[in-house]
Amino acid sequence: MSSNIYEFNPDNADSWFTKLPAKDQQKLFDSITRMNKVSEWVKRANALPAEYHGIAERMTTNVSASLTDEQVYALDSQLIKTVYDTDIFAQIMGGAGITKSSNSWMSKNYKVNETNIPYPALSRDFRDPPVFKLGVEPEGFKGMGCAIAYEIPWTEIAEAKGGVYDPDFYHALVASERMGRTLDGMGWYGGASAYATAGNADSGIKGILNDASIQTFTGTGLTTRLGLRTALFEACQDLAKVYQPGKQILVTTKGIYEEAVMLLAGYYTEATEFSIIKRDLFDTGIIDEWWVTDKIYNSLSDPSVSQQQMALMKIGPMLQKNQVVYPLQTKPMATKEYPDDIREALLYGNVFCQYGVAVHPVTLSADLTTTGTGISRAGRVI
Image 1 (cartoon, rainbow, N blue to C red):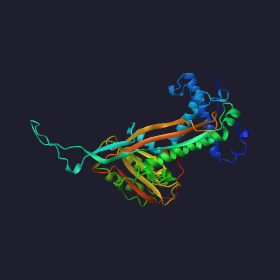
Image 2 (cartoon, helix red, strand yellow):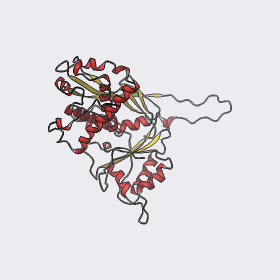
Image 3 (cartoon, one colour):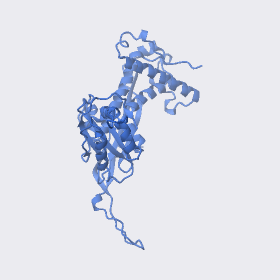
Image 4 (cartoon, rainbow, N blue to C red):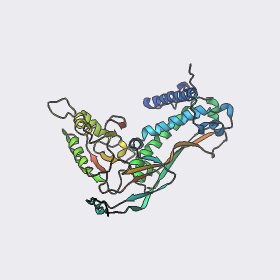
């Protein structure tokens, strides 16, 4: 029989827990359940990663009150999963197969002027084919990383005796959510993201939606029948001459998705606009995926009914590259008040590149009006 090594008793949490909204209270319970499952699986399968062997002893000298290696791994796994669940941009790019590892904060962009490229010459002996040369984008692309830390005092470690550290674990969970929001925002808007510039100067790093070459399309009339379908046909026309291989991915704010689900496509039919769009654009393979996230609206607050946005992007290895310099990870920090404290930083660093092509593979429509702001969770809907 398995025994839970992480526990949480609300009666011992004083007043901080009861003041949390119900959904945040449940979030803490769900996290503890997942961590116990991870810890149990690691012990049963003997699958603890090599870098976690002995990590608990390295983190604190107070062995009697310290965590086990499996507990540290479970805690890290839960925090990192929380970041990934919040970072929709990373999920899209990873699914499109353009995320690779790198050891450099700088990436050169090889490009050509496609308007000057000749077409192949007709021939029977294949001699003297027309030649064009590869160019290099002078400035290249620069990457950026971000980090946030959490601390658990040795006194609470001793009092908890291996349990979950009441408000400290909750704070670590919130920190990982903030990390995910920041990474998601930077994916869309780079250093100009509201999450990146909160307390920091714009680093000049570009995201996928603030590139100077981005296209735009009209998305007005979303509250009328088949208005969204008409707008998406226009967006598809913007990308029709992007000949490089890749997935065509639609990303909308929640209000636009809700509008499509609720709006009937005709007066005498039960079909919704969502079902019509799925039939005409997704089932035919014109658009591959539909994702919902309010983070494509560049603000710390959620978009209002008149601030909804949507973007259609073609994502592929000949169009973009996401180089992960430092994978999402936690690192023990040496600077702490007492040797027995736990102080860890959650960090990530990457370089996002958009190759220069004749027709930019992203088109955006902003400041759109919908009936409501939406109630769906962020993530993929088709």
